[in-house]
Image (spheres, rainbow, N blue to C red):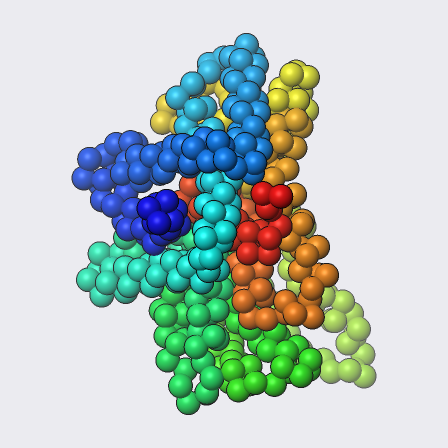
Length: 468
């Protein structure tokens, strides 16, 4: 019983995440130090995961196997340091180790939670219900913090120049945006499971609370996350109805999701992200307006002499959006850093191509006030920082367990196409999509703990990892 309480406390750590992030913001402003409360607490939790794996290794085959993986990971990090100390000059050891800590956090927490969930499931604890409850509570706290921050006028700005958006009392806009996008499907899951009548949509209030906060961010991730989750419920409900899952819950949630999607579309022109997109487009020199009609110019209609020439001139005046501009809109200049890093990697020694260039590549001596910068696209950062061998080793657990779950889901799709599996799947896919495009998921401990918990729970719930 005591062991189960300890394991449940480890999982319940999810609830504390937004509180830790708010305290981190306070420590940054009050103490002005990089050693924040968030860093200290999360490092302690990571060490607790290592202790858990070592403790259970005495009796658990799974723990021994996963601990061996971490030993191999540690060896790769040591090799990375030794290789780059010989190549990079200057070599910022503190920056390198700080970056390593952010990278391995996901792996240690994911493996530790997988063991914790396995132990709890063997003790007949409903791990899916507990995970949903803790993530839902975390989402409630985030929504409340945003509302209080806006009402009191103490919300932090998400941008410093032409764009608008707010992050509540959370310091890192990219990270809190990713967190809310990953949590939102779980908020929707709670709503759909509690709603059995259109006349009683109260369970959707927490979902709306978090959605409004995401709109306040003014980011593409926030807006896109809301739209994807609503469409997932809408399309999922339609499919369930077509497959004869015609319950009151499905019918009610279909109607609610249609209404909320329509509302989102209507209010889009009034949201911060709409204005921010136009500001970004303008900064790229793209003019989306119609060709200017010149004074005295005769407007011809089809059939008039010269109509075709006029149409051709108008077509030539319309803005041509290049592929580079589209990439910039999607990746917000990250593609430029990726190109520089790719060139750096191609010209690096074989040892770096195998084991990576470490933090920020082969950074030159920085200009005054400047620091080496990552691409901020997680899989790119993994690859260039750890090389071919390191990247394969890092991504192996994610691909292996996510792949096993996907195959399992497809094989049992007749029984698994429910709100639970659909929305948890959407949460995971959103996390992976954000990691690839906007980053700050697999390289940010505050975010990676959520994707670690989601994947670990799904793997254990479906018995994809056992002691046998």
